[in-house]
Image 1 (cartoon, rainbow over the protein chains, first blue to last red):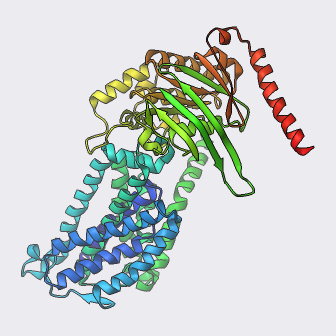
Image 2 (cartoon, chains in turn orange, blue):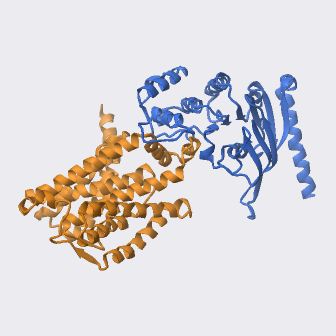
Image 3 (cartoon, rainbow over the protein chains, first blue to last red):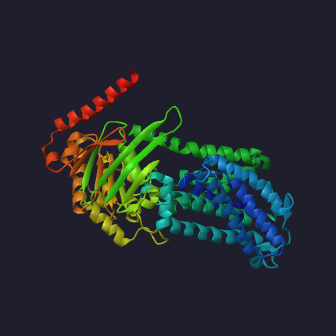
Length: 299
Length: 264
């Protein structure tokens, strides 16, 4: 595998680290199985691409895309807490609706951004050869900021209240926590991060496509699960770190699998590899425990 | 202090499993009074407590704490006035959070939660001092996961958590029922101490007639969603478990007679 291919894997890994942090908030912290991601990721991409193509500042485009993602998460949460629609179903409804909305936003199934300015262009300037180094570097800074901000938030009084909401809603209410508001806020935060990832993704890939969201949730979950398996911990700053590392490792494994010619895998095998990787990560803790027992038995 | 007036609550109304639990329950509790509540299964003890806490909103009747009407107030908004300890040790704490995080959650009960750090040195110091009074060695285990604690330890911490912030009333819903006798005795003793030290108004539901008479100032018996016995002072002081049991049997007997009439 070439260095450029490795940096490419790192770049996508960093973007999906942002998705994974969002998925961590919904699935793990709020205990809200949320499939909105498959719609909010392309929503962020569609909003950002449309604004950038319309001549707006790329960072502004990212900001608006983030807000759009928050609105999507808020809708899913609202369907659940106010209308009592099952969590999974509420998120599927929003995901399906977003497909049409994304088409409306772009006005076409895809929107190329070739030659348009991106958040990376000021640093790349006219020297297009350094793009493959600049893009992962900028993304790394974004991820580090997002991770640290989440760590600070979840250690705060409100952040702790949000964690209690997912861990034991009845106890949280008894402590005076407005659990419904916490679910609304948490889902907004989760999908805001995922939409921001979508906005950054279209700027690295040179355009948005309405089908770019397919499987987003699986990749995000894969990262969370791989992270948990590698670095099991109860400390939140370790959990967020594990999630980011899980996303990077996941993309790296995919890149290795697709680049190793002797295996014979090609790009179309991506989803199969994903399923296998996630399945393996899920059974790994059990295998580890089994081997630990056997090793203990011999002593 | 606490005024419950003619409370009614029916679960699953209009269905074959319709269940009228509270049927005109009225009770007044004065400030600083420690009331024990007994009654058979389905008498409405837990529903009454849940109605006070706001987990259950009553169909009709009125509920006031400190003269403030809370009949329709959602539970989380009552938390500043109402502190609770649940029957299930798992229910009152977050097992996946640490001991100090659980205590921090309780420390902000009824307060505005902002974006400041939930834990700091002073708070940890306070929690350590509070935990040391339990003499369970928990003061050295602040970062440990709550789930690692035994049921008794968790109930003891729950009691501490309920007393971290002032409350108008403390609700104890058979909080020793899931514990072995020795641990239950320890938690009950702790309950008496905390209620006494903080001069709390408290309502304790129990299955044990012995506990009902030995603790608190007043005993109330619920039956079919109403108060059927209310004793305090000297009368209660003279009462034996056998007296209480006889009255308990009597109310139940009447109920059976009622049913017999209905079926006959």
